Length: 430
Image 1 (cartoon, rainbow, N blue to C red):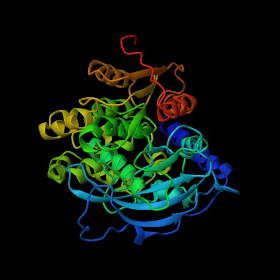
Image 2 (image 1 turned 90 degrees about the vertical axis):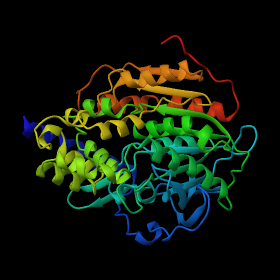
Image 3 (image 1 turned 135 degrees about the horizontal axis):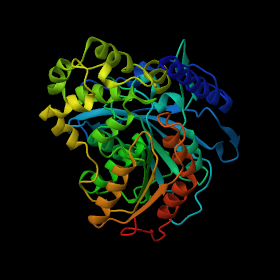
Image 4 (image 1 turned 90 degrees about the horizontal axis):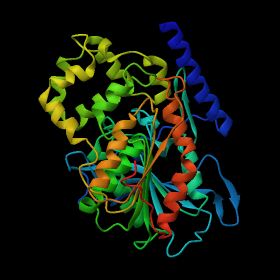
């Protein structure tokens, strides 16, 4: 059985590589260490202040009379706040579209929150947008799949800013699926883009938030935190796709699937954001578990899949129990996991929430619960389930297909909000 799982993992990795090659660029991302090292100490300032910029040519572009199509990138290092509200530096990319905006008012801006890329610095989108495929033998490679959403939005004349999140590219472990850290990084990327010289967006530009999976959680966390954290932003709406709003439920769902190794990203991120938990967590992890945590800390998703697909967290704990059982008897960890829950605040702008009913990675039930919670709080929510039947459960098919199938609706929804059109809501009918 394990041999079959390994073969499937290898097929998945090979398919990812071939897809990236087909898209056009098989190149190794160069070392760019200096750009990602923040000033020490950070200069005094405000969240969203730009610390450093550099040109960023997109891998797939065509010269036109209006500039490179679909857009020209600028790499950013900007000031933000970590999970506990302490100042930090986050990297990202602003992309100026070559397509004119044909809607009312100033050109709009969308903060695109990426889905799971991995935990190694080489996985950062600001490093992959310029190369599309990162590869170091034997298994360290990554294809920037977010170009699908990025190009769909750029083609409408919408400017984009894509954050790398806390610790992805910059020093320290990426604080994977941390609610506050990701929300801060997303909202401060908007602030940074609005301060960027020669960008066509202005303080009057309507702003949208857009993300799926990890990015759906980040977009959801950002839209509900914005009224208190960034009230000055001219938010118009958000797309929240398959959000991991309840980390414990998501942990149970992916244990033993193709993406088991992503649980290691989460544990590493908890230890990074909350160092007071490190000793307690370490005491419950076996030697094999420590080896897994050290490995995934420097990997992108394909390598993590190749090494840890279909394994179970019970293989990594001291007692041989599943991780959710171990964490369930750790009150301090439970408290912090509960703090990561999305849905305890109210979005002040309309939200589209999509989720596959057979999602084999992020449980459908907690996505629907998030929509219901927001509706109960008085938010304007359009909830769209995707009813793709189960296909190869545990292989991420029913997580990936709704993302692609839902792209036309999600882009159209955000475009309509940026144009000021009335938002639909089906609260009370799902």
